[in-house]
Image (cartoon, rainbow, N blue to C red):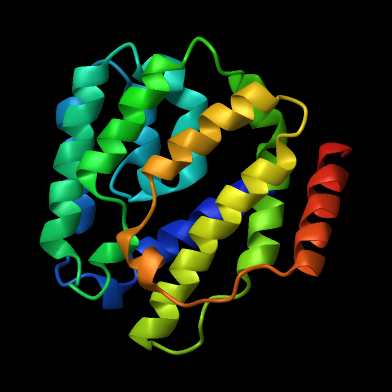
Length: 217
């Protein structure tokens, strides 16, 4: 779990990078969204997400689908509130590195329609391997503040986690297909236009080995 926490911190640091946001109120605005829409029914989730953009990271919400789908209106209100806060603060050059609110909510609706068919436990068993694989594939963050480099790196993170999910969940194909479809809703608009390095066949092989090895630990 330590590696997962490190990866989520890594994603969170990218999300709150000062060059990507034009206001300082975002953490408090996001915390208020959680307080207003999650705290009364899902206090642990509200506390976990408090003041961060972590809910956008692919791995964060999947283990909580069953609980979240019990309160769909509250969750969707939280998403809408949070995305409004992000859009109000995000620099125009970076807004495309986040999924759109409508697609994110559509993805949640899809997840809830499949929540009784997906094996969340299979995803959780593979979660560490997925993140180790994604960290390896995405590489180090850019050393410069160049907008193009930051956008491309954010896109590499997204694609790496999607690919590593597919590579790791080999023992539960039906659940993998559901999660792959869900991840399709979370695509970043900027990434479809970005030109960035895609993992080679050799790297993909390494990623498969890493995923397999981590599952054996």
